Length: 233
Ligand code: URA
Ligand code: SF4
Image (cartoon, rainbow, N blue to C red; front, side):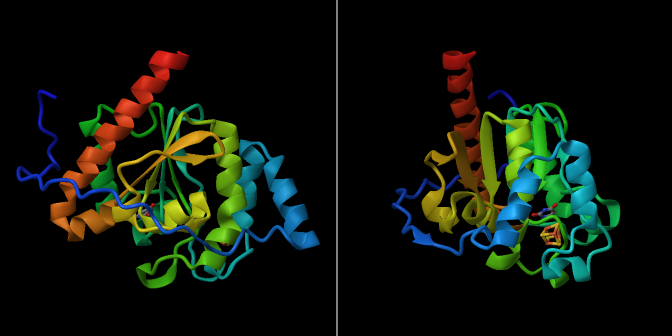
């Protein structure tokens, strides 16, 4: 790398040895009731226009109550890279686009550091489409309720690689409890798609020392995708 990315700290701590994550099941998506099943099947058959309309009107979890608008996701619908965050914040709720606030600026800088740009081979999404009040993390029942939308988006985009930004995104996609520190640095799998876990940009804004680790994770992700491209074309 000739150019040091702007967001990178000069001082890079050594990587901790990756301890295996204790995988504890979290509640499964609500597919075990006839209604849940029916809803999941309906969403699984949607195209982009239907998905956009369904999310805009969705009232299937309590997060609908205080949102201004649902935020579907943004980017290249044939993206190689899918980044999944937690959920919209105040600014995203206002503008209807994910990652447009402070954390979004950092995410854009992180993308630029590996020669990526929002919208070009990149899709940016969230585990929940409606803003959790007071910036709290989404609850497991909320991510579970919203998961069929994310699942459908992944089915339509068919990304080559998924980057889970922070714990709620990783837990939603991997369907088990994780710790970012223990789960980063190795390849996971979401239905055959390689998945990498890293820190959420909002966390990095508060924990500057971990930016170096996120940089390692992005390099790992870039390497992984390159290897996939070299093998599969
Ligand atoms: N944080 C997220 O997880 N997603 C956004 O869209 C914005 C901030
Ligand atoms: Fe529906 Fe998801 Fe919004 Fe909940 S967060 S109301 S499931 S779109």
